Length: 262
Ligand SMILES: *[C@@H]1O[C@H](CO)[C@@H](O)[C@H](O)[C@H]1NC(C)=O
Ligand SMILES: *[C@@H]1O[C@H](CO)[C@@H](O)[C@H](O)[C@H]1NC(C)=O
Ligand SMILES: *[C@@H]1O[C@H](CO)[C@@H](O)[C@H](O)[C@H]1NC(C)=O
Ligand SMILES: *[C@@H]1O[C@H](CO)[C@@H](O)[C@H](O)[C@H]1NC(C)=O
Ligand SMILES: *[C@@H]1O[C@H](CO)[C@@H](O)[C@H](O)[C@H]1NC(C)=O
Ligand SMILES: *[C@@H]1O[C@H](CO)[C@@H](O)[C@H](O)[C@H]1NC(C)=O
Image (cartoon, rainbow, N blue to C red; front, side, top):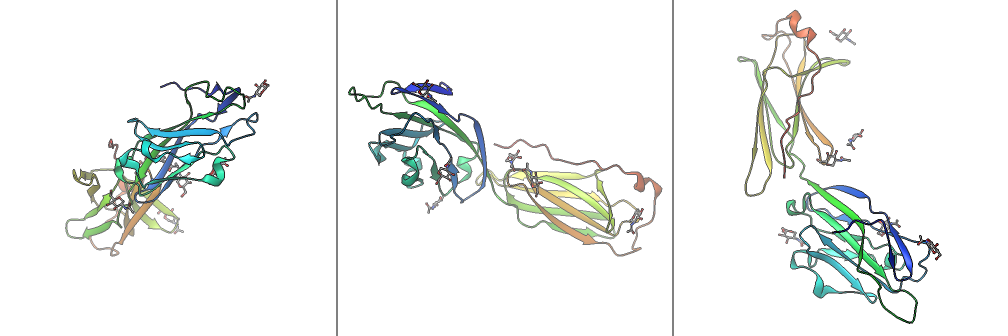
């Protein structure tokens, strides 16, 4: 597929905003796939013709002669896509894709358009030109993490499930209102993905080091939704926690689970 930023369509040159756009959104929500034909030479949009298709060549939306051409739309997108008729007449060919699922995650969509020239020839001179590209990244929020602390074994266990993509996990030791440190030693994290719904769950164990910290917290970050959930457990003062100088020198190292997601 050609990627062109400007091409003759009809008698005018369409210069599209053919930039790579990423849209992050939440499952079951809707996403606007934005696209505007930028061309001052076009004054009459009544003969605009456009379609959107995905990276499998499935057509999401097709528009010609002032109306939606429903017969061209792939079943996968039927009833999920609408345009904005009041905006099309200004060259804005954005559409909205509803009821997003993880099937839509990572998918790229392209808009192609042409405008009939005003000449007596009454035809489209060229094939439709790609003018916009949008990639969707879908996230599923994680449930609140559960944090269990065993004071006998001095271990903290953080668990959560039902999110997407794989989370980034961080353990933090809290000393007082202004001082905390990120703990990265001896942590054991297991991330599991459910093959049916593709959702992730994880289980992370921290051996609580000796030190003057008052609380331990587990942060889980959803990279697509840019949302972090935190669970904090206050440690009983003195209960098995003894001071050790080595613990005060721990550097703040971010522990990110570098997991690939589809
Ligand atoms: C608009 O038309 C003029 C004259 O034909 C041409 O020089 C110019 O490149 C066109 N601009 C665009 C953005 O197509
Ligand atoms: C195009 O229309 C959509 C839907 O109404 C809107 O969200 C978007 O801001 C518009 N874009 C421009 C450049 O006008
Ligand atoms: C949204 O998608 C889900 C899963 O594909 C489906 O079960 C549900 O009926 C859809 N809802 C609407 C309103 O289309
Ligand atoms: C917090 O703890 C740090 C390290 O122990 C200490 O340097 C700092 O003065 C404490 N701040 C407050 C407000 O207690
Ligand atoms: C969108 O999601 C990607 C993939 O998870 C992430 O790398 C990126 O930072 C997210 N963008 C925003 C604005 O949150
Ligand atoms: C994530 O959100 C924070 C504020 O909550 C913001 O400062 C940061 O820039 C965001 N990250 C991305 C990648 O958009």
